[in-house]
Image 1: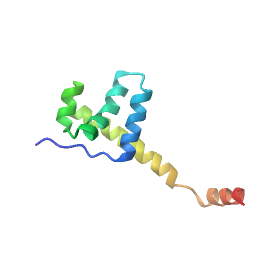
Image 2 (image 1 turned 30 degrees about the vertical axis):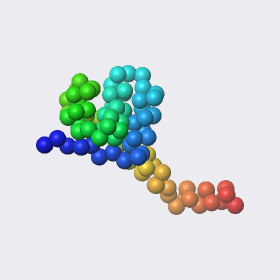
Image 3 (image 1 turned 90 degrees about the vertical axis):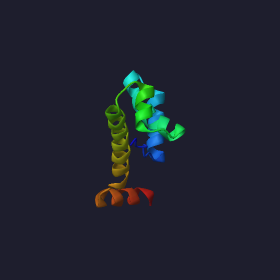
Image 4 (image 1 turned 90 degrees about the horizontal axis):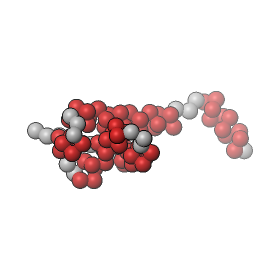
Length: 92
């Protein structure tokens, strides 16, 4: 049974940025591994066929983008008490 990719808006936005700024074919494929299923509604197997790579490579590329998105989110969410106090003092 072929599996559909599960991508959220942040992943799609990140993938578009990767494709736009890509300098290598791998970077383009990585971004397209997220964009193709989200736009066309196809399975990872079909994405693999289009990109001429394995299904494992497709899922690995999607996982890398998912990790980038989650690490960016963690960086935004983790602000220590001292950082918050300094920020609030600057605003006053």
